Length: 377
Image 1: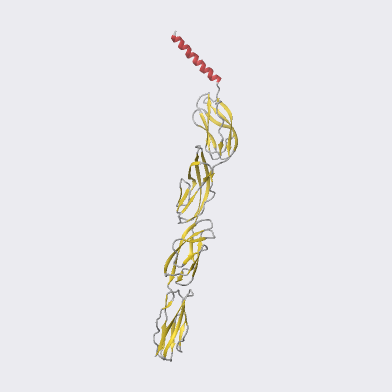
Image 2: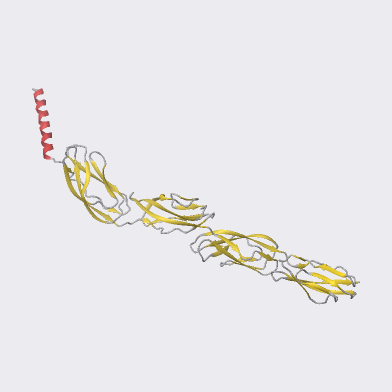
């Protein structure tokens, strides 16, 4: 009797299962919640479930359209997945179809609402870099409460020598001039654990920025003016002194180096130049400051009346070429001073002691005078 009761229960169970299969046709789950609202740039995920029929299920878009950036795929044998990152706001409707292993199918209409972007990359352009000069700039993203933002290059490449850190800092020392175009992607997770993504293409120009000086030689106690001229980059340029300048000299924002040098020597003048795009670097020019110009001779060699005479004046310091002239006093008759060489030459018949003032002037306009004694016997 007990065995017969068990058999009856088994038959009833089989019939119930068969009746249930007939009653529940292949379909999407009736209790599915509507697709969640999405946002441009926010990672989207929606699972679609179904029942009845036979596994595995396959899901497809029959008509209509999913929001751009989203796709439909089979998550597993019984669940479909709509995921991706929406790229356009609006309302989108799509008829999704469900197919089972027996070839049966069902359809349902799904509506998706995508809101405009609320978070993204704020940086619109990058300042130019200078070849062989340190470079650093920070990419910015917002505005949205975030916990972590990570950055990476997703296409193209940065200029050689530069890298993008996960914190959005582009840094390094570019090695060659040129332009590079690349795409960076920022990923953010806000306080509600909503991941957001944005990408932007940038072009970073690397210029070869250098400088020359219109004048590189000066003289102690002689007014000095030189103009720094930049090449490469985009005018106008702005200049500032960087480091120690030669004693007595200063650098103006227009690149004019001026002042009165107070010490002789060879000096490396370092100035920082920034072009119109914001690219900048330290450049160095060498300035040579000569000692103050002086007449070197202490006396003139004696001359003999009636005999040919020749003596050459010399100067210390200053900047060649030199020009010589006579001041107070006069040479004995028959002797002349050659301005270009500083040579006194000729034949005189006059005897006596003569006091002669000579003056030398250099290329910078500095001058020096000295009174010398010439004895003619």
